[in-house]
Structure formats: C-alpha cells, structure tokens
Length: 247
Image (cartoon, rainbow, N blue to C red):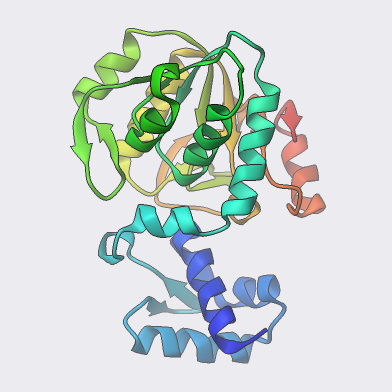
C-alpha cells in the first residue's frame, strides 16, 4: 500500500471511530506499527489529527464539512448495506431514519425501488432524495450534519410510531453498546428507538467493536444488525451472540 493511500485509510478509520490505537490501525492496514507511527506523525504535522499516547484521535468539529467527507468514504459498502436494509423491510413498513452517511445511502437505494415504505427522518438529504416517501421531522437545522435536532425534533418523533427505527451510530461495541459522537444525535436516535417496534442498526465493518464518546444504550436494544460483506467473521460471531439477526 502506498503512503498516501495508507494515510487516507488512517483518516477514514479515525473519522469513523474518533480515536484508535496504533496497534489496531497497523493490524487493519496490514502494516508495521513503526510505519503507522511515521504516518501518524506526518498527519499530525499536517494538522489532520492529534497524536495521543499509543495512537491518535481526530476532532470532527474541526474537520471541514465532516458529513460530506463521510459521504465520500466507503460509499460502495454503505450502498451494499442500504440494499440489505431495503430488502429486509416488508412492503408497507413505516420507519424512522436517523442522520448519517449510511442512512443517506439507504435513501439512495430506496428511491429507486417501488417498495411502499414510509420514512420519518431528520436527515434533510434523505428527505430530498425520497420526496413523497419521506416526512422531514422539524427542528433546529445543523449545518455540519444536514439534519434537524433539538426539542422540536424529539417532539415530532413522539407523534409517530414506526415498525422499525433504522439508526447508524458512530460505533457499536460488545460491552459499550451503541455510541455516537454528539449528544444531540444520540438523543434523536434514542427517541426513534423508543417509538419503534424494532431497531435496525446499519454499520459498516469499521464501526464494529469500536467506541465513541456518547453512549446510547446496551447492545441488547438491537434487533437486527446489517453490515457489509467484508465484515470480519470473528466479529460477526460475537455480535450474533447478543443480537437476534446479524446480516
């Protein structure tokens, strides 16, 4: 793997997980720890991450247009997860959809399907993509993640009851459960889960067994975990011990 490709992969990992250990990055990239340390130092010198003891972290608030960056990463994997989600839902389902790049990919797939599915979402791009299939939940608009949040959004969610809450957390961990980077994102996802019959988590392989800074709930609240086909089988086996369906 070329140096620039490694550096981009490192940034991709950190944008998903917020922080990561050098040893874990090296294992994922198939590179030596010394090589990864040099890459981390170079990225730190470029102002693109912060070095911490044993690894690195990234401040999403200081990253230019973090949602647009996330939309451009692992898009093929996110579309694969989106297709799995659309195929999983029965015709006529009503679903909540929270704000994330993977849920935006779900909306892209659903737009091109004739499936009669109604979507209640706070993600503005998803509502634009889906048109009349979507109901955009009102609230305070956030520019970094183009979605609505706050008390009005939570009040809107409480007016509906859905068959499924489809959420895409920053991380899903065996012990820590579902985790988000921002509290207001976590609050919206929690409200959606409370007002739905079942919970579906969309998470690409980079989010599995990772952690972030705001905890939503135990993993036991998840009924279905949908991930991409490249997800490590050893991790899927662990999640299948706690989640009824892992696809």
